[in-house]
Length: 471
Image (cartoon, rainbow, N blue to C red; front, side, top):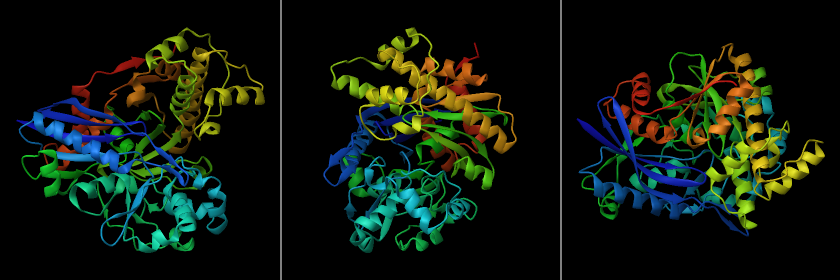
């Protein structure tokens, strides 16, 4: 018996509609539609093209519907932290801001002056980053209080798209946990943090677990997308990293994961959060996962710096594929230069900023595109080693294997550098872990599979991986 699920997977650079076919112990994935996710810069800030993204998602649903007799489910995952507001009539009050919008710059200190960092961490267990929903909401209260006064629901991005599909207003737990106003111990919103900041909480929607039925698609979606029946929309790990971690093809407990893409999210899977002075000092995060797990991890800037360099080079007329860039990086001589990747959070001319950073820190400056790319990847590998050692310290586990999943797992040079620098065995793949985790959590919700262990066994049976050992 075959089951067909549609995974709508939206990343920071692109989105795609992936049709997943589950036949016994094997899952196959087919991409039916891919589209760019390009933020829109306006005088008032940096925004997501939210309605354009939904239009593309509907195109993906329509393409999938043309190719199967019926879909057994649909689910949406996206990046974390961003959100939109609905008014009393159900309309979108303001287009959702991009997490790289400048309105949150410097707000951590302002917020912590009102609510101590230790108190925020005690009730959220979340890493302090300016992109977090907490600081976005604080900025919204400062800049557009009229919107918050009119808001009846705050919906994180995958919840917003689920609302467009079903009309239901809920907060899926894995995405809510990225906000820094969700309590992973009490498993409810940390309303006290918001109230202490003078932010209303009446617009926070009910929380719902990943892996359950949400609602069938609405009639207008059926008609617009050519669905043959009222297809069920499921909640899954709607934070894309939660879906990716669910699909890590691991055994035992001596492993950690890196969900590698624009961001590198590196961590372990736990049964309970680690919220104490040591994890606060190390600035680690406790996010909800599939099957009631905790993703104890660190957010690392990831391939964002390389992506920004590539954009800058192309603007200067230097156009090449990622494959060509990686070949140049592999051919470049090894350098000991290590970038502080956190210095490159904002968009801009990253090649020039790397030169400035190297001069400022008195390190060797990379002289061409290949050398620059290699320095970025080596810096990532060094950061992986630092985070790995801290994970072992905080959890008391010896981590012998690093599982790298997501699009970045295709970067063989980075994988080998990670193995070399950390001294650990690296298992790379699947690249489509997020879509696989999305689809298989739908199957879990529908009762087709019974456990997270069975889900991972299917991943191991369905996808090839590549191993890298220290050289």
